[in-house]
Length: 415
Image (cartoon, rainbow, N blue to C red; front, side, top):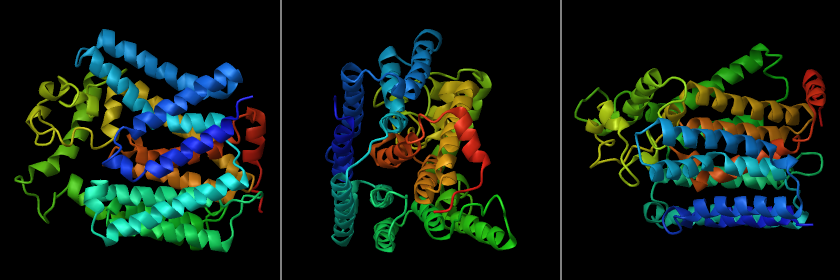
């Protein structure tokens, strides 16, 4: 028998170790990690022959293969090579989750200790990088600083869970300390994620939304208001005023991301069913770095600073517009994917695994917030949150529909 849990542990540790150097020094590490994970799947299928556990992965791969052939034969905005490149890159948003979901590894206490030490060590390295003024040379952008801190905090807390799904006060304190390191990034998106994390770890209680009292309603409203306040600078910068307090047409770089959202609407209106196809819009593969897509010229987006052939810096700098490549069918599948995850995650809450549920909610919030003005979900910085989410909901992979419905219809189990 192949020890799939042990192999998964080593791959997860690899991802943790390369989190910092991957951004500027080991730039191929995210592709390498995905290749290694897929190799593990292949080995598991050959040695252990457990096809059933990878059912969700096969379904998603089937969808991607459909869009690949559809793009090659029915869309002509890019070359076959660029389409193949995007076919591979877009899967990076799902493969880490799906494989973690399928394997749902059980780590030994020794493995958990190693991961906890590694996560704290990475956080300590972040502090050193900040103190020495090396954030930009090492990480390339401050947003990666907050992403790594959030990932390490979630990983530390997950590995601190006891058999009942609880964590000690000391472990929670350490996890929050690691999370707080991310505040040094000064990024509004991280501030929003930080507020969500504090709410889930310190305030949230099972049933507070279902049985919403005035007290909890006020707490929720304050929490939402805090997320908006801390993220307002980013919202204003990207979508309203640019980097000034008034609307200034000279700030052309402030128009790139809004132009992508407008372009998303235009593409969906012209190709509502299956979209414009792989490598056509808002992806690295549609940029001059691979091959410039014809979509930008067709909709006049090639005249926008940041989306042009000569200045394409912002083409793949946000995730949601990518969904225009898949049409409303693809968008519906994307929504169903997250609804499916949410239904699994709710089981964790109902069986009393509150900390696991909280980590899962934070991972989902991370994806939702980062995808507004970033493509972290396609980079190695998004792997740990997605893998943790997969590991949490993967515990309920074999649970039948009736059993799931019974659990969700019952009151929460209080541990």
